[in-house]
Each structure stands twice: as C-alpha cells, then as structure tokens.
Length: 336
Image (cartoon, rainbow, N blue to C red; front, side):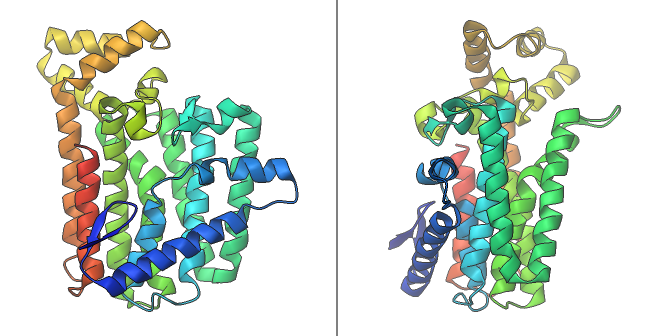
C-alpha cells in the first residue's frame, strides 16, 4: 500500500497516486513561479510561508476532484495554485489580526518584519492569484470572487460577533463556512470543473468541500487547545490569548449557561480576563484541555466530517472517492 501526501492517505490505485503526486509537484512549481518578483525582498516575504511547508490540503482536494474528469486538463494545476495562493494570503492577514508569532513552525511574517509588510505581502499574493485566475476563464473568476466575498464576510462576522439573540454557536458555524468552508469548497469545485466533470459531480464536490472545510477548522480549534507548538506549527492557545471564541470556548459558555456549575462559571471568568498574562494564559489552557467542552468540540468535528462523507454517496466508486472518504477520517484524526 502506498501513501498520498500530505495527509498520509492510503492509495491502493498506483495510477491515482502517480497522478496526485505529479499534480502536487506541479502545483509546488507553480506556487514558486507565481511568488517570484524582481524585487528580492518581495520574493523573500512572499515565499516565507510557502517555503515553510504546509499540508497543501486544498491542492490535494483539487487533484482528487479532478479525477472525476480529465485530471490532466490544462486548468487543473493552475486552479490549485490559485486556491493555495489565496489561502496563503489569508494566513499573512490572519497572523496580523491575531498578533501571532509563529506559523508553520517559523516566525510569522508580522513577527519577522512588521504588520504593514505582512498585510502588503498578503495583498501581493492575492494579486498573483488573480493573475493566474484570469487565464482560467470568466466562470472561474466569478467562482473565486464569490468565495473571496464569503471569506471576507466570515472574517467580518467573526470580528463583530453575533447579533443580539443569535446563538453564538450557530453564528460561529456561519463564520467558519465563510472563512474556511468557502475556499475548500472552491478547491473541490474548480478541480472538478477544470477537469470537465459532470455538473452533478461538480455540485457534490462543492458541498463536500464546504463541510470538510468546516470540519478542518473545527479540528484546528481543538488543536489550538490540545496540541503543543511542535505538533500544530503555531503557538498553542493563540486564539485564547487574543480573546477569539473558538468552538471549545463556545461549548464551555453554552454549558455554563445551561448548568450553572461553579467550575464552569469560574473558567468562563478566567477566559474573559486578560490572558496576555503568561501565567493566567497557561492556567486557562490547562483547565480547558481537561474540560468536557473540548470533547464536545471534537464531536462537532466528527459530525461535520461525517456529513462531508455522506455527501459523496452519489459519486461512482473509485480510488479517488476512497481517498476523499479517507480525507474525512484524516481530518477527524487531527482532532484526536
């Protein structure tokens, strides 16, 4: 049994493995080419996170989705480059908003240089993604534009918080659908579309990507609490320190409001305090790691991964479908 990186998916189909590996290698070359600049510093900054590695989760989904059409069609690899460039650009911006110091095991761009340069580098990557996208036709441009609007809307919704009377968990799931689900959905959609797959298949893979993207981010929420920096590639508890309410925190607050247990209420009070204090932050992280809210967040991850898996039912049985199913399992595994 062979392995398809980056998630260690088992590939019983050698032709599938060869196609996916060749596709991902071509994407890597395309990413390096798209981030070149005549200005050495711009190139260094643009390739900073690119060269740090990453799971290439979205390009992998593009390659697998393309298997339901012609995986060698000329638009497949460029569409994967577009999606990954867009994702990379959002990381530069996210790290500024979160004041993150580490990303993918290296200093974040804002920590290495400053916030202004990190924002501008993200803008540069968006511009390069648009340049590649322009050659894929008006439908691809529209799809990417709609996803980008949803992505920004999700970020704004996270920033302003839920409106009065709105369930914070429902609001947060809407945020994740925009911030993460939208771009993963585009990976599935463009991969199938560029490969010339049937419209029904394109729709299935779009829905699959949306749900898988939410599951992926929920797994990240769990990792932010449960993992160490070596495992996750970024500083644990970053969202806690910045007061960003992720699913474990929201589940804690929901439980505290419903049951009113003193320990839950005390932990909520701690999380609402100034967690820039290292000792207080460490205490909050340690207490949340053993709280039932973290396990509930894991169950939320499993639920969305199961939904993604169920969406695949209409697709014909093949190696690519098996790999997509395993991708759901891999996302759940990340959350423990």
